[in-house]
Image (cartoon, rainbow, N blue to C red; front, side, top):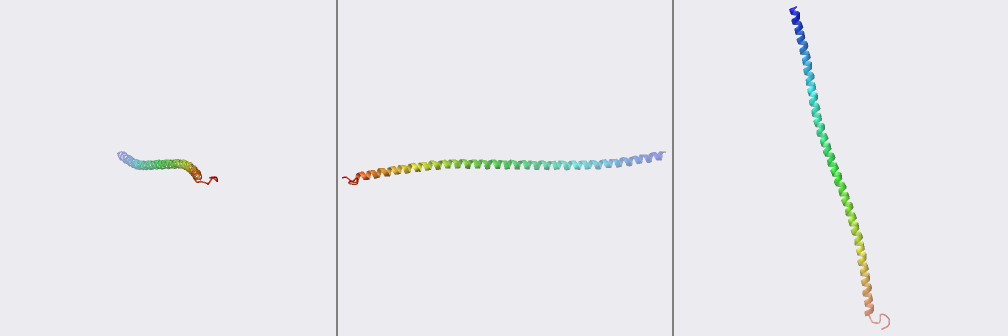
Length: 119
């Protein structure tokens, strides 16, 4: 009977050892899986961070480009307005020149004796 108990005890020990080693290997698998998950999460986090930074960079770039386009448009409007003003000024100065020329002609006609046909 004692031998049977010892055998039973040894059997229980073997079973317990087997369960413990199974548990240990399961624990180490879980630990590895967790470490992998944590690493992947960190990498995902870093990747997400890089994506966000990239999106912010692109957004800033687009905002700059839009601002540049707006500035160019404003500049074109200003230059076209100044072109219109330039044209107006040119027309005014041409009119002034015509008037001056007409005045000079009239003065010449008056100063030349006999040019009016009666002197």
